[in-house]
Amino acid sequence: MKPVHIIILVSLSVALMIILSLYGDTSEYVTFGGADSLAKVNSKKEYHIVCRLDRDKEMVYNPQVDPNYFSFYASDSLGEVRKIVYLEAKPQDLERTDRIVVVGKSKGDHFLATDILKKCPSKYESKGAQTASN
Image (cartoon, rainbow, N blue to C red; front, top):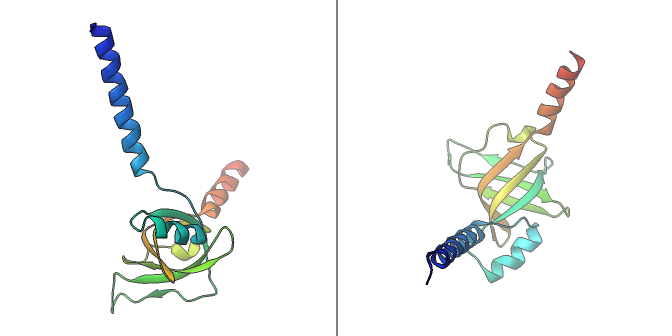
């Protein structure tokens, strides 16, 4: 076998390993209903859900009782409201965010979040308006 053929085979093997490793780490963006359905197929996989805080319902965080328990309600892009349980401290300024992404698994009547990603677009819009007026 020529050295060129060996180099091509090694390159293809490395490329295939990279693709397979990236594919295994990707998680899907779904709704609460989608997470419920997919949890029946693979209960260990985590999913991302883009949602909004339901400010009409109670947020439970009492650091004196349990500093690693925080629960709240959020609605997904289809409007389904679900209780979110996060077994970490409450993220700072969560009430001020417009949208959040919860990462985790569906667990029956609630969604068990392992991470909460937040973004507050109004924070950036007000800075942009001030910069534009200057």
